[in-house]
Structure formats: C-alpha cells, structure tokens
Image 1 (cartoon, rainbow, N blue to C red):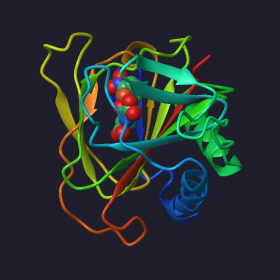
Image 2 (image 1 turned 135 degrees about the vertical axis):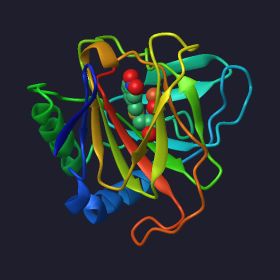
Image 3 (image 1 turned 90 degrees about the horizontal axis):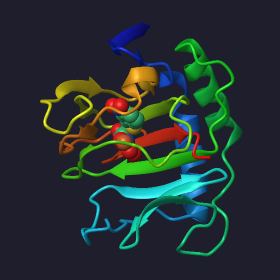
Image 4 (image 1 turned 180 degrees about the horizontal axis):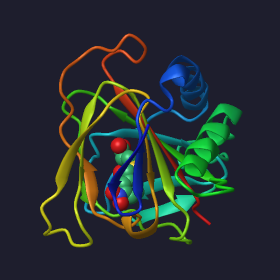
Length: 203
Ligand code: MD5
Ligand code: FE
C-alpha cells in the first residue's frame, strides 16, 4: 500500500517484507567487509546506533564533522559495493513514490539495539536535495519521529515495522527526524536488532 505521510513523504508498508531474509544476508556480507561501528559526533559523543556503508560513498562522522567519503576510515579501503538487491529495491520503491531513475551512490546501514536512538536531525550532507532518500526498516519495530523544518516543531510519531519502506522527497527531504529509544525485543530474522538501510545520492 502507498500511504502519504506528509507532503513529499510516502510510506510503502511491507514493501520489502518478502525480501527481509535476502536483505539480511546482503547486510551480513557488507558488514563482514566493513564492520559496524559506533562513530563519534563532532561534539565527541559516541553514537548509540552502530553504522556501516556500502556503495560509492559512505556517510561518516568523527571529531572533524559529518561527511561522505569514498573510503572506510577503519580500513582505508573503498566501501563494499552496493548489492544488486539493494539497488533494485531502492529504485523500485522510489519509482512507486514517483521518482523515476533513482540511482543511489550511498547506502548507510544503521543497526539499533535495545536502548539505541537517533536524536532529531536533518540529512543535509547530500549535494542534490531534489533526490529523495529511501529508508528500509528491518527487524524489530521502532517509533520514528518527524517534525518540521525547525527543530522546535513538535515531531509526529509513527511506528515502522520490518519490511516498511519510506521515500522522503520534495518538501519532506529536509524535515527534522529521528528514532525513539528502541524497545527490547527479539525478531526471527534479525535477533535483538533493528536495521535500517538509507539510500542516498551523495554526489
Ligand atoms: C532510521 N535514519 O530509521 C533513519 C531512516 C539517518 C536516519 O535518519 O540519517 O540515518 S532515514 C529517514 C529520513 C531521511 C531523510 C529525511 C527524513 C527522514 N525526513 O525528512 O523526515 O535509521
Ligand atoms: Fe536522517
């Protein structure tokens, strides 16, 4: 089903539900090459979400700031390639939401364990804000929060479950958003974790 969330954002409920096992296998292959790690914010805090990347560019943060880079700072090698199953899913989802020819060059892999969260932020390290971001939720459910163009706006809350895909484009591309503290749980395919894939056009 295609459910509008707010102007520019579309929830494709269970869009990837039939592919969770295959996507998790592809994630395992990516993180075998580029391990999940807790990055540091520019302010010196350790992120509770563990992250890795695949594709031409990867999103990183450390004391020097937020940026995209071609190499994994842990290894000095390029990030693993984007699995075909990822590229195809992202393009199909974007198409469904009205964005033809979406070809992401970056995929951020987020792993939330119980207690992990992501505080309100905007994604604005990408060059072309006309390109949407496609987000795929896998495993344990989470409460996603999205607000307005200013941090002060009180966010709306929405439950995201395994296989749900959200396409954030147009006026929704720069909304403040985050993920509430993940609750305890166990999922048959991901264990005690929620994974989120976010597909972006970085350059
Ligand atoms: C997550 N990740 O569930 C989310 C999914 C991140 C992040 O926020 O930066 O890794 S991406 C949701 C998103 C992307 C771009 C814009 C908006 C939401 N939005 O305008 O609300 O781990
Ligand atoms: Fe974000």
